[in-house]
Image 1 (cartoon, one colour):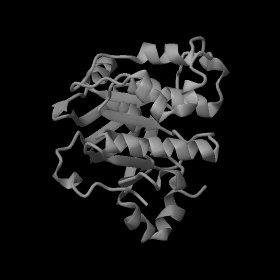
Image 2 (image 1 turned 135 degrees about the horizontal axis):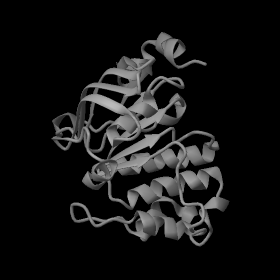
Image 3 (image 1 turned 45 degrees about the horizontal axis):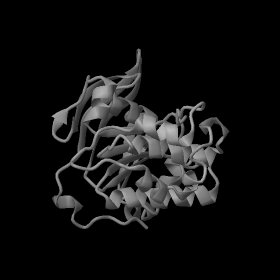
Length: 245
């Protein structure tokens, strides 16, 4: 089950979203989205393909979509800000397609992602190797030759080199073997312990069970459920209605 921080309720929100609408041209994808994330908390967006999960993350990052409503990061509005400014403010984003630099080595990908220290701390290669031990042994290998699981680890590791306070993960379990899923779940738990807030877009309910503090179920751009995993388990019909294929 999740490892919810009992003191989370006393922490100020890191991310606050209210009344969020998002569209691609005339096609509205999100309506009246609202949720918050505190430091050290993992909020999971669940839903089938096309529910609006990835669009929510893109709206936060100012990517591709037109959005209305309010998005506050650390109490400051980031709506309409350029993506690079949102990243510089402390929001990290790992897209579903990972977007690693295939022609660069693992170590070079990490170097490209390196940013100045934030709050007195900057991720080092040594910390990355400790978090993702398999990457250390292949530090000189070109990223294009990595397996899907290795590429996912690298995508997360490279984003961490930007020293984010909030991390957005889009479908991190997609196509990965169970052993890699377990490692990614452990990494998410470790990041929570460091005080990093997370928003995770997922379809794999079993994967998120070890780290989710709260879940939102989306369907056609609307939030159909918000609560803990215990709340979700108390109504088995919700999974069948909104998550079953």
